[in-house]
Image (cartoon, rainbow, N blue to C red):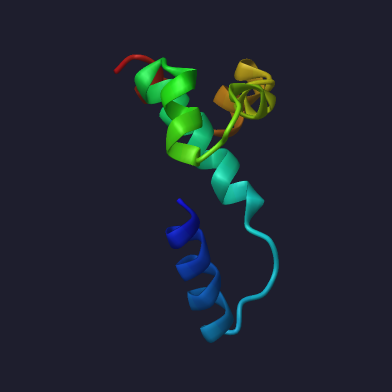
Length: 78
């Protein structure tokens, strides 16, 4: 994960895009969790050393998420 994170940052700098992309990381973690129903796997794929870090991302309002992103139900039913 460190390699890809570093390469992503380098590509963003080269494209003139600055800033933190923590939202992308959160989206990835939430989608993986909903797809697999496995928070531990999402934690490993995110490169977290402790699952407690990943659990922070799991504290969201599912109803609000469904309202904002109706297609998220496709991941829940997979």
